[in-house]
Length: 155
Image 1 (cartoon, rainbow, N blue to C red):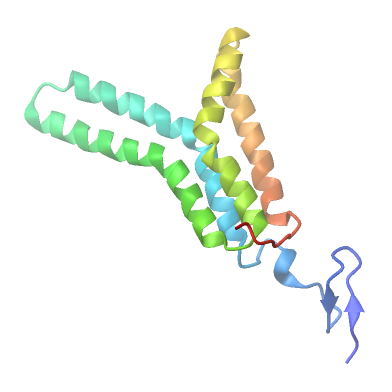
Image 2: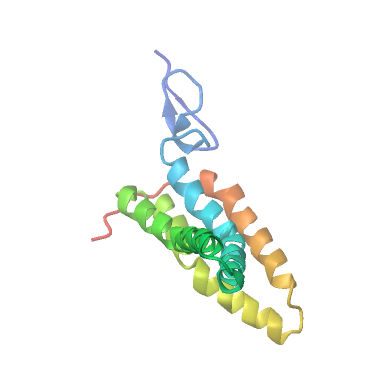
């Protein structure tokens, strides 16, 4: 049996092939990707919440009001799913600091979105916040599966 050190990862491999723990197919990658996807879609969830609240206010008959209220309830669930998914990822991460870093950043998505929105509103660029938000979270999504692994005891 030949043991080789993979040059880019410094991981021992008995077959000479790269170890799969740092690839996008590694076990913890889903936990690192789901919270940033939810954070990326957070502005859409807020827009849906706003539109569904308008539908509730404009509904005239009881059936339309019930339908609009159900849509409003669903939109509230979407908005609160961003921190909930991030908190669930942190809870399932164990000692994997890669998952923890990305999930904590995603948990902070709602106040970060408000901060970015206020800054761009003050700069009189009201639509630029969505562009910066999308570019930033797409960058996180590109690098999240490939972050370096560091395990440590957080408690």
